[in-house]
Image 1 (cartoon, rainbow, N blue to C red):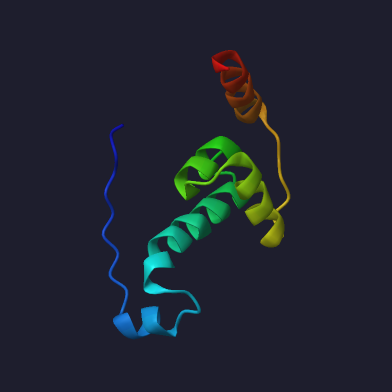
Image 2: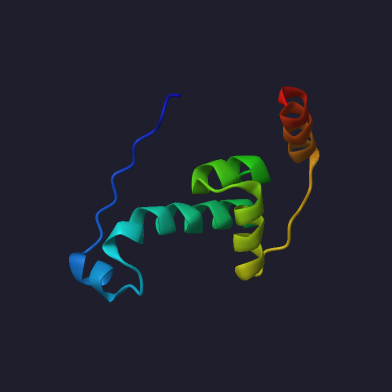
Length: 87
């Protein structure tokens, strides 16, 4: 899969001030971006979940924890149909 690389400089003292381990920083940033992009309808559920690198169940749980309502649109239906046809 082709990827798009983004470089993000974060001051080390901010990383140390986070209530997560240094090993969790990248995954948490991806999750936060995925939730935000889903909330603002920039990404479908499936694509946001893919960005967050979470299962459907875990991404649904994350959305709930963040107070984000699940919206179901044509793109979500198409992805569900493709998934069902693959299995």
